Length: 117
Image (cartoon, rainbow, N blue to C red):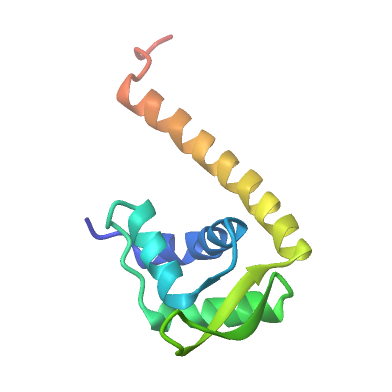
């Protein structure tokens, strides 16, 4: 399935914040986690993820540190800040409203009320 770029862009920040709420992570692992969570439907690229991570860092939602991988390679690890946790909670509430609204309209679109009522 092709998911629109607008929908992917709108959901990217809350997805990354939610993934980082599970614990510190690095770019490639975040990309793998998004794919795993979406059953392979969302395939992110470095070019999409890293500008988002840098924006989240500029906004104070995440902090980054350099560390070493298991094989000794340098990696940048990201973790959520308290401000990032607050932003995640706000994003969650917003997405719950959107989800609820869509579910409601889709239910009525599937089972429309008879005309004249």
